[in-house]
Length: 144
Image (cartoon, rainbow, N blue to C red; front, side):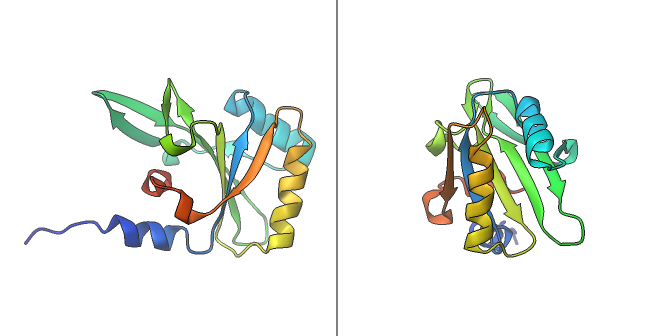
């Protein structure tokens, strides 16, 4: 008997209580996280355990993930780099530089809008948009 991973169910469960933002900020990931940490008071750190590796055209591509756990809650923020060496984690969103996943605790609309508004104030940020699961074709790429 062959066991098959059900990616659709996996993706559904992974994104169950999650919110996802797309960002255009044409700077290096560490510079962007520095701005988020310094200006907005976050504490994003790179998490090498969660780095995502995709194999395309006989090559490996590595997409780094930064993580920030909100003290006293179950909420965790993950910041994905959407580009590596000309390839994209989500090819359907080539214009986005970063993907911001909020996971572990439900975030209401007011909190999310407030976060988006804060992020828009950063010098590097050109666009912040809320993304819905239905629009994301390759959501399994975001699962770590």
